[in-house]
Length: 76
Image 1 (spheres, rainbow, N blue to C red):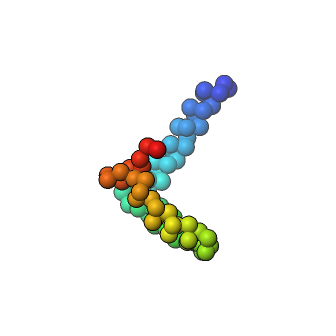
Image 2: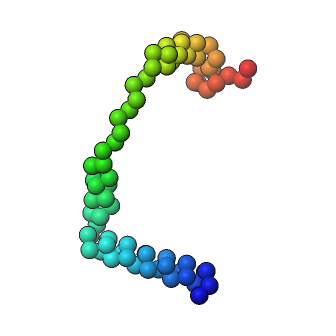
Image 3: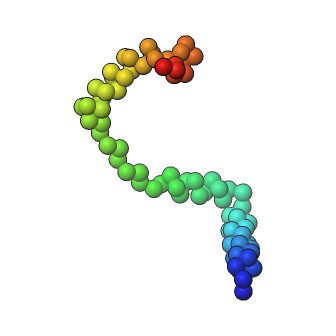
């Protein structure tokens, strides 16, 4: 069996399996999958360092001097 034929047959088998799952679950299948994904525990966010907080504050103070009125960055 050559590659294109095997690829095509595999795609058809996977597509048919996916369609049978959708038919079995009805129209709410995508919503059900989203709900399952939402139950996954997300890792905790890292606490910003003191340096990072100070850099952020300083950047916010000086950034407007390098921006146009519409908020885009000026060409220097």
